[in-house]
Amino acid sequence: MKCENGSSKLLAGLLIGAAAGGAAAILLAPESGKDTRKKLKDEACKLKDEFEFQSYNLSDKVSKIKNDFENFLHEIKSKLQGAADDVKEETEIVKNDLKKNTGA
Image (cartoon, rainbow, N blue to C red; front, top):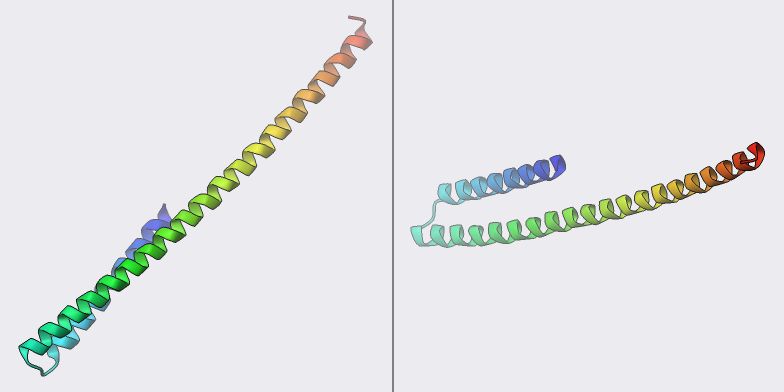
């Protein structure tokens, strides 16, 4: 979760920085109001597209990490179950040997 939070903060920072830089560049340029509004609209569309792209990438990465973690947990569970079964078998063998040796 910490990684997700850090990634989302980085993404937000990059997007805010890009928006601020783009807006400052457009507002300081010596152009008419109509041209400035068009540029602002174009920059907003670019920013929206970039945000959607980065959000999709982040979502995809989180999904892959989740799937990898679930597979890892399944593998560990299988190994632990196998070890538990081995212990049960060994316990039965020792128990039967003790019965034979003690004459019970």
